[in-house]
Image (cartoon, rainbow, N blue to C red; front, side, top):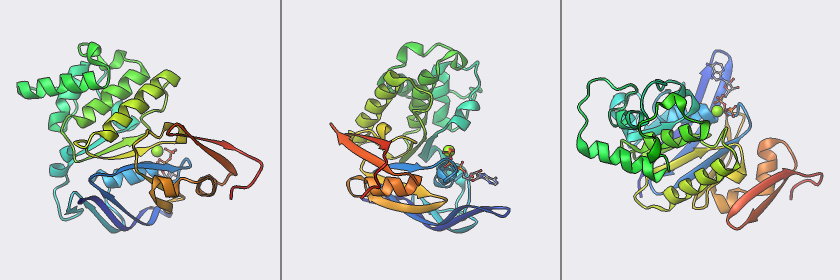
Length: 265
Ligand SMILES: Nc1ncnc2c1ncn2[C@@H]1O[C@H](COP(=O)(O)OP(=O)(O)OP(=O)(O)O)[C@@H](O)[C@H]1O
Ligand SMILES: [Mg+2]
């Protein structure tokens, strides 16, 4: 087991705002993490740091063994997959689904004269099939539904065979069936030992796929609690993270939470 991500006392400041504060977090290559926290807690910012897109104001970030600041981040980028709404917005709507996935082999968006190897072509086809969107390969990305886009984006983020995969709210905007399909695709990914280390940012415990092993609770830019999901995901911790008395249920390997009048304990 090796660390794919090692953050030590990471602080991110913008002007007078402290977005992340003294945050330390380690992710090993066989771990599957869920990150939960209120709106504005710093989850997306954390993924920016974890993907090498943002440098800490202070503290150290070591990604795949390479210390940020001392390494060429462009060399690291294809080795860290990231899927987020912000990145989806940058995908040209007139690009075919196949090309959206294929171009990720080169860490770029937009197809431009690269000569794709047939091995890449078949990998793209396999990934689209794994996420149930192979039939959409020739469609323009801009014509897809929200749920179809999410699945294509995850296929895209796996194309470069990353060692770390970061997913920022992949289930946002999906209907119930779409969410359940995504949860089961992520559960399958989590079970596969060949999969990269996974980090899933979500707003809902209902979206935690079975097989995810660890949980980071983020509150106002700080770690509220972190560790194995079975220990950290409690009504008490969740209530503290969201500043709300919550009841937590665990049924058939899935989690559910709702507000309650009784304080957790
Ligand atoms: N450049 C910036 N300057 C000042 N504040 C910023 C900047 N970028 C982000 N923030 C603030 O940092 C906080 C954390 O933002 P971030 O997007 O990481 O939160 P989040 O946990 O992903 O929230 P959400 O659940 O709504 O997606 C927010 O309050 C946001 O307004
Ligand atoms: Mg966010």
